[in-house]
Image 1 (spheres, one colour):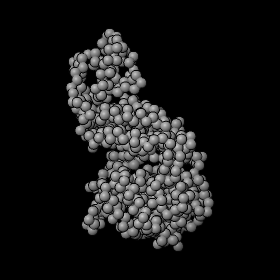
Image 2 (tube, one colour; image 1 turned 180 degrees about the vertical axis):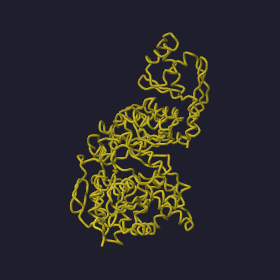
Image 3 (cartoon, helix red, strand yellow; image 1 turned 45 degrees about the horizontal axis):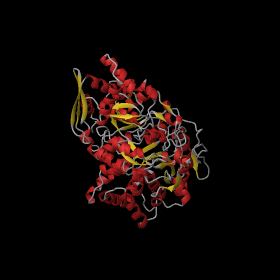
Image 4 (cartoon, one colour; image 1 turned 90 degrees about the vertical axis):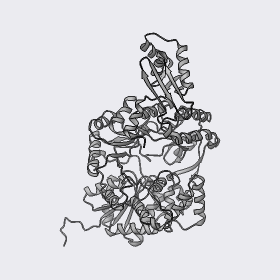
Length: 634
């Protein structure tokens, strides 16, 4: 007989399916595993996103075109927008075989630029998915779990559906629980409608629900009635009044299983792990002015963060345990208070961490330097455009000059910038795109963007109130019917992205020149990265310009021009420049002389102007060594 205090209930398995990034464990699985362990519930974790690549490596000798880590990353990153990873898992249990659907899907991705080589590899990989799923099921069932929980982002949905079906086929007593971003709002109900082997969809913050939920299910009891817990019999959609967990009280995520799998997979030499960590939830800017195109945060934008002490403790604990120094913050936006708390603590810690953060682009010079000194060496500042009128349409709360300024400062300080330039906003002024095309030729020494059309995402103001913005929602994006066997209502619930019309001209016509310039900017970025800089001499300034978009030149600025040039290191008006020159030279220059000098800088593409305000584009020579020293070039 078992002692009365020992539970005889079966345990829980937590699963991360492809296409989670190979170089990172799942934060959601790691955090929920720690929550369950703290509650005394036996739990196993399964990083099957890593296992897929190990599986592909094992079968490499049997196929003519092996699927490598670079291919995985391309599917997970570049092709996530068209759900290519989901298509790989359209096995018969998920979607009835259909040569017509497969042919249409191949035409779709080929038209968007997928190579025939990658498409061939994906077709071969897809044919082997029943074997892969069987291996995954063997591993999960070996621990005889009563409940299997899957974390779903938008590239993990059909992989999770397929494995869940295989598990239930073998053991019908298993309870399947889905949770994560792909379950938010109507999507959770759509998953239950489309896939009868999925028992529960959890919406919102799972840490406050999983202990009671999983403990009930593993004991054979019904899922408890709770906000955000959806079952076929009962349940409720996520509401904004949902109780939120206290972030400082969450345990440190458990990533041991990922690292053990990486070690035995044979992929350790090809994958340098980066650890995900979380220091806040929600978006403080979105609480004030929800960006019109943003569908993040589902129905709960409310912002809160961990204390700086707790965040630093967790970073150090994770780094110490796993001997990793690279981190990726999953926060939507950096807490402004961290410029006074966490970042100085990181700067003064003596640690050599490298951290990625998303943040807002209206940074000061001192904040950029603090980010660098704290180890934040890659950022995504949400630039989205180089047009102030279009940024206003987005409700970004910044100007084009602020976006350009942060690009230059980050180049000076060795901080890599990831950003996108989006086009196709309703009501956008078409003439801005010709202006941005010309402007971009002056910026080619800075971080280059990726570009693409506006995607209409669920939960964004554009989706929730389309008529307000002159948008017509046409239905789920065109790939959804090719991935799912579902009626129109169910597809509308499952979809996160939607086809739409704005009533204006086709943006691919009026953005053609800009897209061509941006493509060339990306191609030439390595050549242009160090092609423009200045050096100060005794009473003069030298500027060296070898960018591919201009005639190579060496400018020598005498005292007056040097003072004007120094005045526009930050955004400045003509009056501001005159005041600076007067302080530096001891005499007030004429407005005409200042305007002449500023005009020459703009004409030479050494500065930019917007509404009478000017900004230098030229970094100092020291920026070159700073970039090399930090390794931000890679």
